[in-house]
Length: 408
Image (cartoon, rainbow, N blue to C red; front, side, top):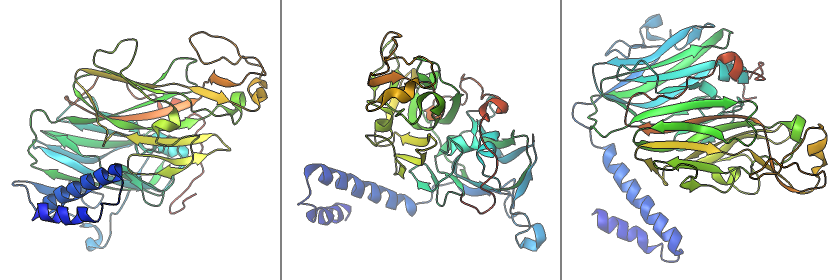
């Protein structure tokens, strides 16, 4: 029946070119596989939701406040307070979805709130990142977008559906390091218990790194060298361009480089430019799609957030990985803007050579970059650096909304 169903669907595709035809076959096969999983229940697996209405996700204990009439839909989170969003001990399972929204969605609050995740009783978090950056709002400015892993349907909420397996337990916490009280935090952590995970199943990790300004001619490290076996899932970025030095000149000529396993001075995987890595070209405007996008772009202020997820094009590593991206700009028409500050401008290249005021072409930049790298690893802990202090990562991040139901 499945073969005949697929064949009938392919008859109408004869006029498509070869590439579109192949893509359609893959989509039909994927849809068939997903359809089978929807009506099969794995043995011994149960469902839990952790929310303010049932914080411990206890069986038959949800919605007790106010006689079950929405008595505890949110919690406040005071400055320096930590809240356990979900926790489980002594059982395997999979975190399936994390959703939340907050009353203060200003850039400062998004960067000041920290989300962390621990697997199998580990002391060090496998995930440690500001809430805004983790959910792909790297500049702290929200916008509606949809992707395969993260989304915000109207630019007012935070959604993550990255599957996160654990074998003996998990804990997800959020900490308010913003130095300002948060009035309302709504959340859901949806997970299953009893999932059977094999020895080779990997743990989800996420690493946040912020640098302001970036170091001249030293590639920004999206993911510092990480040892172990795993899969690089992708990254989200926030760039705040240095308009005092470079005006509105183009900033995104830097190439992504991925050093896999035995790579030393030179990487195996190299891209062709920053906007190219994000799936666009000839500059970067606002857009979103399943595996690549730029949810927020403000050309006038030099603010750019973008993401790339390696789902159809997996990146595997056997014993180590390092991911970097260069900070290189390009000036084609009027290069005088680069010299208004009086500071030297250097050509992109192996040497530190100054450009002349009438030159055009590639040049080295120093901007404000932040990134969250998402990856799976064969161990519950990694040896990556801890997240930077809140005062440092919140520099130049503004307060002042949006608040409650506002979008801007």
